[in-house]
Image 1 (cartoon, rainbow, N blue to C red):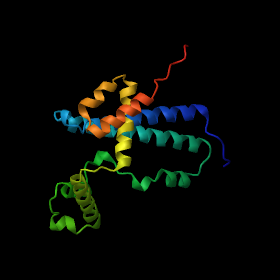
Image 2: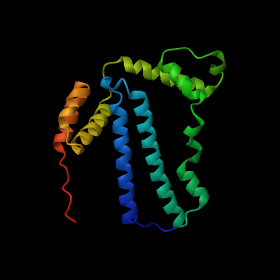
Image 3: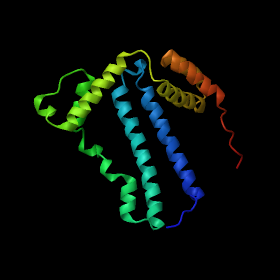
Length: 189
């Protein structure tokens, strides 16, 4: 198979889907804020699965193009990393419960401890719980959150809403991001 540039319609479709996925990710972050106590569980699950589904559509769109252009099935399966896919339809798994147990500072049961995946996920949860106790957040994470919130605020033309629900350091940076962005003017058709 020869290397060719991505066709423009495919490139545009991917950009559209990735933008939709990023907006869903921003909403996941939005529903972590204290003023969302009444809806956070429902809305975070909706938006997280929306983002995952949208990114799955991106992967499947690219995969369909690769098949169309003659990519070998085994190569495509390798690139799709199908072994890493866990299907949500099966519901939560034992490792997910071990992770939450670690996050909540609880001990794993003896039975659960026997599985190395459970031990690893529990340990990850414990580490994340310890990190949550530290008031200093990773600057890269703060910047990513601020970019997502600032972009959404600019797109919705609601920059002032940033101050009402974000931690002050994220709100300040998100406002700078939003103010730096110009809303693109659509060409007349």
